[in-house]
Image (cartoon, rainbow, N blue to C red; front, side, top):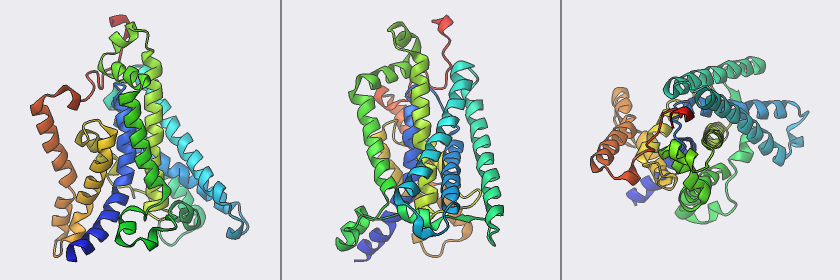
Length: 333
């Protein structure tokens, strides 16, 4: 009974902790399969989150009464703002690395720095507008639509609590990961994308547009990652935006790509494991603050172990794309 009680408490929290990471990892896997290494995922997630917050804030404040709130618009406006914000970040990254061939590592880190600064600037601006006693913006009415549970979740006992007690964005993350896995492994477009990531010169010679593939994969990956920021704010944080509130979830998403060996379907289970490892210290009594910080390192330690194990086995299907992080110069073909 103690085990079931602990599981019923730990598992849902691990899932909710892992969903933003899953969004970020799925988006990064799509990006990396094209050969682009986007270390800007933390910044993209940040921009996706603040873009949704801005859309929800403007919509809520346009109403004379919350009774007038339309459920469809309460969902549609933040989602569209997130798509636009994260898409622009993806386009910026592609323009710099694909068109101008700027170093991908430097560009990614710059995107992260810019994204966090962008989010903090507009977050601080919204906080000043609401004149809050605490440095945060609360969008609880919009959050209620995002966090709405399945109607039968409360009638199915512990099974319902474990599997049916999440908002729709959590299930969307799993569905998107499955679709991305199917696309990469079972479709001609996925084969072309993987070919670009492995050897862009050969793909180019075969008539595949390398530039188009990289742009599409990176921009779609950025939009997916942006939803991780939206989920974190609207569902996990109950509609409360606070600057620097994301922590290191964006970097965890990048680590999860390696842990899931570049497979979106494995990322579903890996994200739950990561989420559990990240919060397991909460279920261990008597830990000091310093010990808690050590436990938060567990996802990274496990990732390093997996990376060593995968590298030692040297199996091609478990490795990243051969041209990952390298700009393609057609003249060198």
